[in-house]
Image 1 (tube, protein in one colour):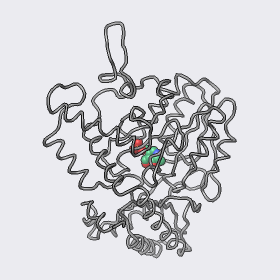
Image 2 (tube, rainbow, N blue to C red; image 1 turned 135 degrees about the horizontal axis):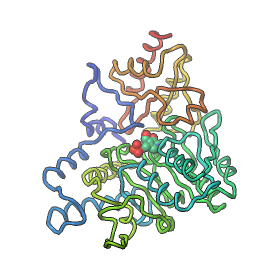
Image 3 (cartoon, protein in one colour; image 1 turned 180 degrees about the vertical axis):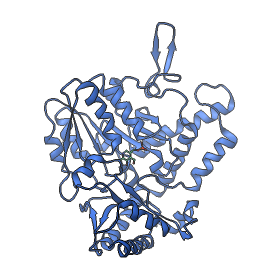
Length: 406
Ligand code: PLP
């Protein structure tokens, strides 16, 4: 039984007020709030258990190393990876995708080679590929979403030509909520001999994920959206791709030996983890994943699906509000504009006065905004602790905004 009241009590920030109103936190797409167990793990680590990892021989260093390294296994379990050796720990999706761009793609791609992307990618899954376009003459091939915001897997597969070297696609749009059939895309791409990178920043938050079942080559996640600390994250890299990848960052921890004239590298995945990592962030991330696995991602997905359907019904009744993306296969993420109303920033300011936190702007999705023909939207993005009462509070505040601007 999914007890949302009990779950809410696990998140201390949810009981605070903002602008003298109970906080209604609907900015989970940008970053999620943290349960007390994660906050406690951070405090405990810094208060009693902190030291640098891997290099120490003393008690605290061994303790911190064990706790830090245990997270690799938790991530492998959470993502359904065959081995924890396929998990590279990092600071989040942006670092993970840049690592693939610099360490795997740049040494292998030549001028005229192509990367296939969907038009609804986040800048984190666009700008690293622009680097290859600018520096190496790699061509970016864009696949549009349809009028409902859905991405047809076959359209992605059809865009793959003889020069295509990678498909890079999100599993869930941070703007439209659209869920993408990344398994079908991977099967089609692999049939043409092309590896697939999946941006799982939103996908892993809203649904159970199994990378072995998807079959993808790379799957990036970011800890702060998964109810863990900011500055934590990981990327799953299939072992064949790991063997092809060069280190992106050089420094301590990623080497075996360094002399004046030579360097030998540590074994993967350590080869790709240079320098002192986000030790406490990663330990906190592991606790967040324990929390999610205990709740069960199936249960989280079912709760959010009910919230999504309720919200579709409520927002659908506002004939002066346009929700972007109507595909039924979507997470509980709603981007919208209001007829005759001010800029998305003004709407978000009015909602803020009512204690409602939403995001307004381009949501780091420039090509999608261009495709939709809008410069900005207001976005309400739901998480595992949100309630239908909060949807009602959102609708009341939107009616107020419409009255003011309409
Ligand atoms: N990809 C998607 C779909 C996102 O929503 C985000 C964050 O909003 C990112 C990538 C980037 O994540 P981070 O900033 O944690 O690296």
